[in-house]
Image (tube, rainbow, N blue to C red; front, side):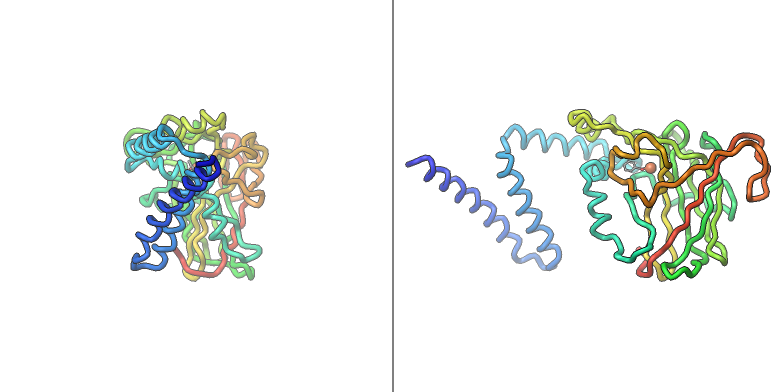
Length: 296
Ligand code: BEZ
Ligand code: FE
């Protein structure tokens, strides 16, 4: 048999495996599940052919995913982290982004949202003991046609000055998170701390992957928002701090220019909410524009 005939024969055998697997999903009752699974099989098989996957590499991949599962628990989601560093999370955000011009852009959710965050009043403080320079964050929530959105639920969460979320500490600490509602004019206002940059959890398999690739685990300083209102698409986003040294190499590819805001540093004195600050503080303005659609 000539070399090219042997190659043709191997390619035919490889394709026969793929075709058989694809056909095994032909009777999947849900058309969408069938589409997704068959496409996944096609792309997975194409990937294995593309890199000529060795048996040892297949085993290393299984071992990697096994470690990813073992380190995942109710406080740590290593699979989301893997999706994040592979850019799959941001690609999914891009695929599902609303086409509406003028709406605030979305970015990655991240693993540190907590349902049981405390409600805070308009102008209240979400710090809850988190370390950092006090920071007044305020703005409006509007529709793309400029109408104020009243009663929007605004969830916010952030790491402290040491780069850790409350859930990364032992115990049941709640700090650096809370939610409030926009007022009748669509305004919102709360105190927090100036966001800090931090590394994503890098002591697991995802961290090993970043190290092997010579990639930084750092995320630029940011504050997370989830904004929900009846009749509007729920917005998941962050604001990033202008000038942060990690803006151009976010480990999870979440930065968008429209989400980079100025943090204005202020000396002790009177703040615009009528309070007097005895220490240096800062302020951020962030106006939010929602697009109509379904809450998710
Ligand atoms: C975060 O911003 O909280 C985050 C996002 C993706 C991976 C890890 C952390
Ligand atoms: Fe974060």
